[in-house]
Image (cartoon, rainbow, N blue to C red; front, side, top):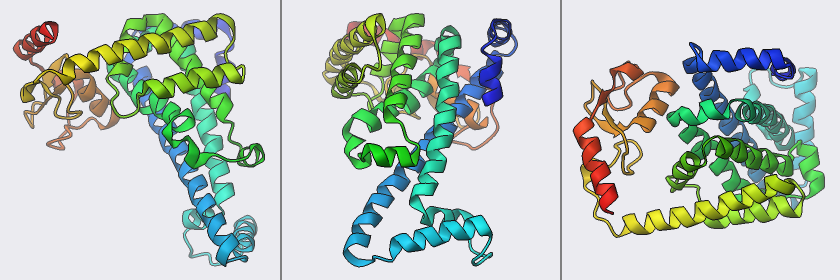
Length: 323
């Protein structure tokens, strides 16, 4: 990854990348981004989960087991020297030393996030055009991590600056990268980004985005036009999502208009050839790019195998316009 960073600092290499992702390498690029999204999510989730367990363990240690910290230190020393029970699972033993385990995964996540940030910066127009990847990037990564860093889950990972430093976790830098990634994408196609984020009923919250604006302003993470644009994006997003959800809350949506993967209304329905299940194209593409299989029949499937549901698409669009 360090070599990747170094390579893209050269304008000539960036031009080659641009030609590649806009040409024959588009599918490979989107699959790479999908893999980075999956990796970053699993890495930071593992790190955060470990921090939570560490805090729980600290509370238990202070009240009942003063030897627990010494045990952690001994486990770490055994891993370094090769002493201890060789048959014991290394992964399980590494998790006994919570701080070291969390530090390892925060480090991996930081490097992966840097790659994603760089690709958003250099390749935003291509990412926005790849609707399935854009949705995964926004819902699974940017929206989700903002939810954990400044939203409702923030309290569960709150710690002192010293502890963050010990863990190699820099939440301010991560929030900055997330905010800048939104801006890269918004400047490529604001309407599409607003539309896709607005569909995220799991992680999107106007309150969370408002807190994010306050956070980046308070700590000087964005300045000048960047801060102004991010604030405007958050406000416009909140307004449009509110209008959209109010309209559909009042609507009685036919069940066959709903995606069988995400259970939300479809905009471009397609059918899996083996299972005959219908899903929105973006959801179907996300699944195929992940493992090339029909999620319902567990059989191999390619993007070109999907069967467009043209009549259903027209019905849904008429329904949406009426609402």
